Amino acid sequence: MQNLTMLTDLYQLTMMQGYYMNGCRDKEAVFDVFFRTLPFKGGYVLAAGLEQVVEYIENLTFGEEDLAYLRSLNLFTEDFIEELRNFRFTGDIDAIPEGTPVFPFEPLIRIKGRIMETQLLETAILNLVNFQSLIATKASRVVSAAHGGSVMEFGLRRAQGPDAGVLGARAAFIGGCQSTSNVLAGKRYGIPVSGTQAHSWIQCFPTELEAFRAYARTFPDKCLLLVDTYNVIKSGVPNAIKVGLELEAEGHHFVGIRLDSGDLTYLSREARRMLDVAGLKSAIIVGSNDLDEETIFAIKAQGAAIDAWGVGTSLITSKDSPSLGGVYKLAAEGEQNVFQPRLKVSENISKITNPGIKKVVRFYDRAGKAMADLITLENEVFTEGKPLTIFDPVQTWKQKTLKNFSTRDLMIPVFRGGKRVYDLPKLTEVQEYAKIELDTLWDEVKRLTNPHSYIVDLSTNLFELKQKLLLTIHQDILANNQNQGVDQNVDR
Ligand SMILES: Nc1ncnc2c1ncn2[C@@H]1O[C@H](COP(=O)(O)OP(=O)(O)OP(=O)(O)O)[C@@H](O)[C@H]1O
Ligand SMILES: O=P(O)(O)OC[C@H]1O[C@H](OP(=O)(O)OP(=O)(O)O)[C@H](O)[C@@H]1O
Ligand SMILES: O=C(O)c1cccnc1
Image: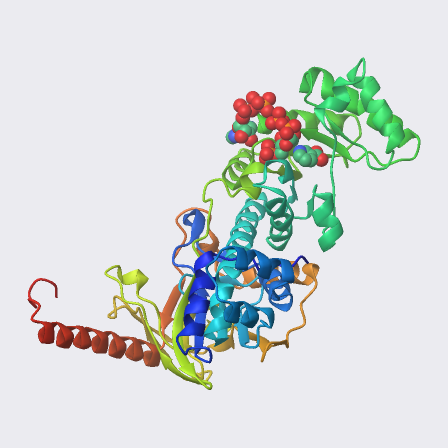
């Protein structure tokens, strides 16, 4: 992977120089990566992008050209540039593995180390995690609408640039797509590649039948014909049937047809009937054309005879929800591995951060279904089987007692002292893991529209710590204001 060290916002570097020049070289901090709002008005997010975060961190070094460029900005001192020359990440990272369903406010990645190092990481980590988590989530929704039918990712041509096309294909595979049309993604990540044919192929021959025959000669065992260039029912399907029967007579297997326009329900049912009557029962029908989870759901509900779906633009650009708002927030600061919890106050209650070094515990019922998550302090343990009452951190009267549960800590150690301690799983393993993980969620949480809200509460310890810090901050402000004669009634 390329070196992405310079993929950062300028203010990370200016703050780093600030820390450096103000005696904070050895100050340490803990940052959390989390998002506040679920995309697609959906019920979950599928975490993705950790592998690229690991590669980014392992490659973190400023090269001579980088340093020369930074020097040319006339912002940085020579001392600081020298410091950057030796820059490495030496801290600890814990993260929730790729393919895990996650929910608002849960730390997906926790970064602990010298502030000079942890500060720099914000921009690139968010860039990598926000995009891939968004596309993996979108893909899992499309795949769930296809309900067993396979989904091919066709988005490269409409992706927001080459990187989004390639990493989007990777994320779409994690979300359950069976293949990609993107050859670079196939080569780089081992994703199965697949494809059919373009209208231009059909247009380049005097007749549709000649075009189909030429293709069948070229790829006799991979022959999937695009039947909507002229007229699906009167020309495309009859010609495909002719060629399909010729192939089968020669001992080949005719793969099927693709529909790329018109009423996909009506056309697929008609095409199915015609193929079956002709004896081509195993030929599949692929549907494409501006599809997303809603159109696929509707088309399936109407009784379409589509076996596989090609989905491009809406998936790779996450058209209806174009960004995931993951943030990187300071949760503790300290020195020599002794930390004080910190929080950020806001009038907007959802923007008040959760302080301290935290983890996420998932609670499962006897059947292995996820019941709730607790964001807790790092060292909290919950005795399995001992009833536990949890409560909503805002509407605290909303309580639930968990019984007969088992638990799992979702975060795993990824870096310790700058060294990777996590073996990256293969992409196929991540995809399989995501499928198993999604199976642990109730269908009501995964529903495409108006899903149930999955419970994510704070442990009592974390809740009390947060209240205590909020009160302390409030009292400190009051005391300061009193000293300065500010009117206390203007703002509570
Ligand atoms: N039976 C159906 N129910 C709901 N939506 C459908 C159905 N069949 C097709 N669609 C969707 O309706 C939209 C039709 O778009 P549009 O009118 O641009 O296509 P078209 O004119 O048939 O094809 P094109 O413009 O590619 O030649 C697409 O998003 C398609 O996926
Ligand atoms: O519709 P999407 O979900 O984005 O899937 C990819 C589309 O890309 C191709 O179309 P092409 O670029 O040839 O343009 P078209 O819209 O004229 O078919 C293909 O035929 C699909 O329709
Ligand atoms: O192989 C296909 O059919 C394909 C690939 C990319 C975009 N649209 C279709």
